[in-house]
Length: 559
Image 1 (cartoon, one colour):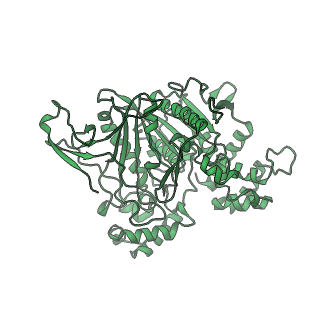
Image 2 (cartoon, rainbow, N blue to C red):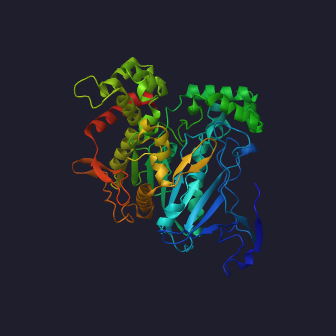
Image 3 (cartoon, rainbow, N blue to C red):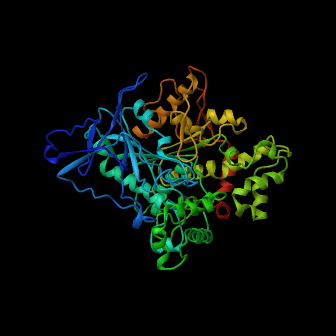
């Protein structure tokens, strides 16, 4: 990719700061970056400098395709090149893959810092890992500008990582001559780059909080579970929103997908030549292979279970239950109606009990294949025809089930496991205000999946092939966004969401109290006050979540 660059003698380093006509410069020793400084208007505390398109690993192309990211040569240079970092790096190739949209050479990250932050500032760091099913989206849709603008006491970072076939091709041949879960290894490499270099931007590598929603939330818990906790983690706190993934592929499914990829790409499916051929295959061939497999089954290219010693050695729910993770202070939560996005149909599609079975479990074939498991699940969610049922109709029954089996219940399981590991600093939330454009298009979806990120990221409404649209907020929306960003940025600043909360916002209390579990419910109000408040976890939700997190049921949902 093209950049403007200027070369300066390293002689000046340590005596004079490096200047550039492009913008403020941060010197990393092996390279320097010129960023884009903006002084916003309105209710702000100061200006923010953005640095984008920062490479954190070598290009994952050619011989590096389907391998773990390789660290850059970061040895100090006698002469340093100043690169133009005022724009975004390329998106990783999406699904559907379109050659020319996104890039295979995409391992970059972005940094936002207060303009007055220096190498001695040691500000806490917020790192965001975007969602998108492990096959879509880009950091451009999740700008951390407002986080740093509102809270001048933090530095923000976002990481681009390989998606789809490039990040998650699995199979024995990849294991023998490559690396499984390359996309998760990319995230880890980005976090390790933060450890080495964020101090140059004013950040403290010993105060890093990672955030993610949906597949990004899954990434957060997988990073906590990495290597069974044996290697620790390069962060100190974690925020997992609407944890979404699964079912994890069985090994037979992984091998079948690999064979299909090689057939489309024109490569042998076994032997020493298999991976060599795939590494030399034209980009179009791999795009065709990804598109051929993923129209109805996007999870063909998602995190896989690895042999002992690997990054992810079991279903995350089981790793947390077994204590095979690194415990850190945690924030976890979901949207009120996550399940409506994944129920499998519209309200009018759910008339009978069989409709619930057919539509909800279409995403979970191992559940659908077991009459016993289906019967147990339906018993946990009693028919609205029965006295005492909490559900008004079959649609409410369906979307509650679809939302709880992973988004709500895995989050609760992770929180319980972290508490059992001795961490008391846990907070929980339920996001209770919809994504406005999506609600206007389909009101029946209510507070659908991604409603929280709409408000946390300036009205983002991401679309296919890395496209991003931002919708301006009205006054009440802006107030809720301001409140939420204050909570989320406070978590990075101190671990306490109340450190820099708005004066009008309620105290976000801890997850556990003497009477049970509680969470904050983040709700839009009027132009002067939100309706955000604390609530107790419903007892029936806790009971249903215990059902989904049983080993025998985890075998079916594979999360």
